[in-house]
Length: 448
Image (cartoon, rainbow, N blue to C red; front, side):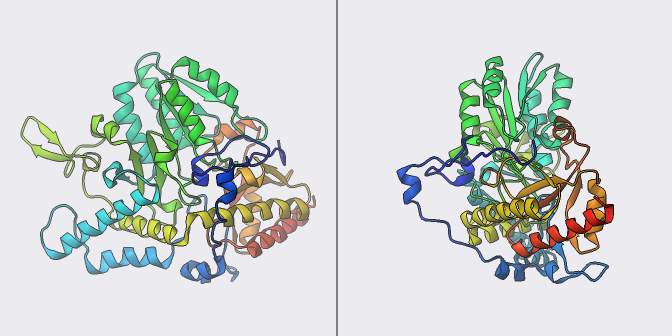
């Protein structure tokens, strides 16, 4: 499976991350050819926005951060937004009528509006704040799932899902005596669409899939998958954690029913995230948690729920984190996500070419650069990824090693673990060159 297959995003008038097809070359169309190339970003200038990049590790080596798919670095704009809340108007939201309380509420709701613009939601009320994409998926599984999934009902997933988009559905179908079915993938890391089409004949209630694989980097054809699922009568949930930070995402163009993502993967703070859902679905769903702020009226024996999105936001949230996530959304929109996508695709291509050329025996998993996000998972034969990561750390190089919360996907390829390099707006070719040098040193140390 290593180093094989080409899968290219289809050119269309829609933003690049709303649609992709399994094709050898990009499809030509007049609208695509007429569309101007995305404005290039300057990663060297952007790097000055990230204070952590000026630091060194315990060995005195400058930081080379290649683990953005796990958690992204934070720009000064996000850090300042969080600090301003804590230092200048640290108060609860939706409660006080004094000045700093009103300022906190305004900043919190402004962040919701920013995130709605980032993904082109119809309205800010369709954005539910959560701690992360995992909580968002659990919210849908508990609230929508427990009302709509019954005995014998089917949910369709894929073999490449993150545990966050697998385990909640396992729990649900075990409780409700339902069934899970899985779309297999090819040795190239692409979904087998003919099997997906066959599974839809089972009339599933829900189809859930990742937009971009966090291990293979595969960009899935989300609009096509959604249209097929809707034709079969299913609702669609998309895990967009690896898509939203890296390319334009338009939930209206995609046509899905639920879309989830995390703040900490899009240059925002940990403990922040969002669930987007169609208004009519969110309004029909019962609350996920009960308590303060998610109610309109409370009596001793009954309560009336608040309107969306507040119905799903019980208790005091991580206010500063969500304000920081809003600042991250504004930062990304200010850069231009078309340019971000072009930069990361160029880096990914460079990384794959460089590692194949410079590192003896390296095995790279997943499709070619044209079909993937900024993720490159690989192995050095006979050397455990944990050893690779530990040796690279001596040179200040940070990569991920393990199963990346995709154990079934690793089992599919008979892999115990992989090493993973991943990129963001602040990543540059010199860091990939350093990675190649470091990997050659690993090979030398192990005598391979």
